[in-house]
Length: 530
Image (cartoon, rainbow, N blue to C red):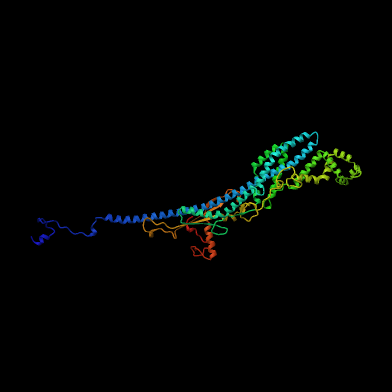
């Protein structure tokens, strides 16, 4: 076999001739085509899903950050609203304590005044044979009531309203608590907002008030200590009604003295409110002062003389023991009577004039009024514990007969810090509303993508910065005696205002409009879509 036969492709070793095979190009080879395109397509699909996932992830992050901003704004505002309501509660608590003090003090004074009046009336009744039994019964009933009730009320009044009364001490303690709350609530609200922001995914946060007190970036309450008379105004609107009603019921135990005691009690309430109030806190014109109450007692005694002219005769007999100087002056003022009965110490007809007084009640009252008014007034006032002339008919510390007055260093309520002459600041609440609006600004960096390198991230410049605004308000009444302060999330408006103030202050211009004209106001709503 030749070499040509051995190497020929068409001849087998066995000598058979095989068909010739033509060589083919790579472009004509169809094997593995689908695999190659699938690999390239899969790679593109993976990249597409990576971009979509990253976009969704960052969108979710944006929503999360917006939630953090809103949550922190509401949390800070809610803390302020709760603090305002707590201060309102304390203000009303001081008013309630004062109402109890006034009620007890007025009841004590009413008992003491009524004691003088009832004793004078009973003495007059007992001087008349026809009413003596009734007068004795009335006086005995009254004394039982007085001796049982007065010591208790006197001790309670001294406990509450004395020089170191518990009522005043409690009010001072509440006042100190209010002052501490005023300082602490703003910074605590800012810290509370940070806590809520970080719990919701934010990395940095600050709470910016629209307007603040000392520091422009730290929330502060728009309140200040007001006149103490405002506590009295609030207390007078509802002066311990349950306690007052209980005391009114106890007046029934005084039997026939109940109407006198009730009328005197209401007068004492008005008197006490008037003593506690000033032009800043309203004015009560129904109160009675000390002189008026003394005059009332004098009139009761003179009425007793009219009802029992024998008392005028007794006054006459007492005067004649000392030579009749008062009767002589009376006769000089009444020439007709002097012509009839003469005048002490010479030609005076004592028996005839006594008979005249005994038969003429009006003349008996007139004689007592002109000759004994000063003495009767001193006697009535001497019945006031601590008054002129001794301890009188009642016990007590000496303050029982004076209206309740503010002590030194009195407690003061917290009021809205508004320069307004109107007690109702509804029309002027914008001045304090600005200090109750808070902008929460939160920031967080971009999260790395779990699919693909960081260069494929759908980045937001400087990470995510979001903001939200919450307003604290009172839908009922803008004052510090109405416990209805609330918070609500609102459309943010403070950011534009703050950047405008900063731009004007620093003479910098932020942003231009599409026509390249300087935008005088600026618009920072592009920070997010809130």
